[in-house]
Image (cartoon, rainbow, N blue to C red; front, side):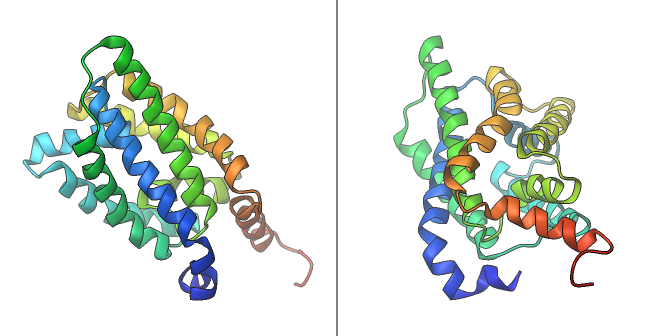
Length: 220
């Protein structure tokens, strides 16, 4: 955990982290302006907002706290990237909503929605490859990946489907974009990590944790 705050580690990886988080926020804006369904987490936040009267962005921030608590039994820990994530993705999303026009034609909506999923996946791959700490929700994915040796694709898809069910029960806006995101984001992130995480930081962290949990490993 300490290395994720060490300037010698952080500074060389910071550009990838920042570009990835900005891309992530712009991807959310693309999906929102497509108008055919929010991602499961955003739909979940919206459903809570409807029931509580709390603004959507505030729900997202508040929900991050209990999600971070879930990290600990999974062995995931925060870093400087976790803190930047909370601020930068929201700013990038707001900026994207201000410059990306809303679509009303079905073909344009589908194209923009797909572009949003791919952009979020690329952003996830970039900032996760920096290994400076995932955001609260992506930390669940990497935590499950590390703890149970599930693939990134399987971990992310399982989380998105569970949140999708919760969003539907709470009355969040569910559409083609929601379902596409739930099934598509896991494979996209897996591919993007292969492209951007050439040093294998995410995979190596899982292997190290497996060795730490395995009795009789070399050095014990």
